[in-house]
Amino acid sequence: EKEGLGWINWHAKKWGIEGITFSIADLSDKDIKVDKIESTNNLKPKNPVKWVPLVLNLSGVTNIPHFYDSVKEATKADNIVVMIFAKKSSRSYAQPAHSNQKENERFLEGAVVFKNSYYDKETGAATIIHEMLHLFGARDIYPESSMNAELESKMQSVFPNSIMLGTFRDIGSLQIEQLTAWCIGWTNSYYGWYDAFGGKRREGQ
Image (cartoon, rainbow, N blue to C red):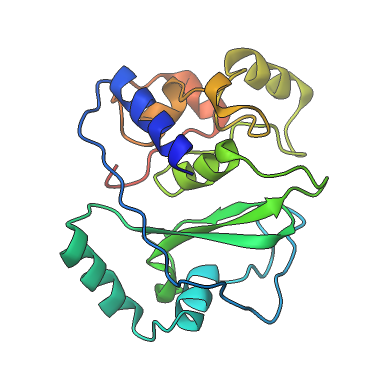
């Protein structure tokens, strides 16, 4: 995890972004037990577990807005995210909040990162950072089943080393390329071809 945060700082400086710092705190000094950890068959399951409120409640946090305000006051942080690490094999995914999000309890953003992938390959720093970047507006640029072969080939040729394309590689071989840098607000340089990749910057970025 810390290895990945250093990787983010290195790439931020490449994009002229200075002063990024991270503060990491555990919600509990012991494992948080849940009745069931549901596997995900795709990135957008029909009924995803609302991980952030569930885990916060189990860790003893009963008033999430108060928790959020307290952390902001204590750390002076600009952003707070909850990273949840599940001891199970499945597909990791982020749960960002959006301005039109009806489920207000999810205003505090988070991601669930599974210990292993479906193929029992151990999750590394690249997957953790990939999911974290989603919470700041980054988009997947790997091909989905609905994408055509031409677009799939274009994605792989334009962004072969993107952190948002492949995560089961050593994080040192990956990068934050120009589309992702734009999505997370590190650059204002926009190019029309971003539309082909579903590029869109979140409000406030």
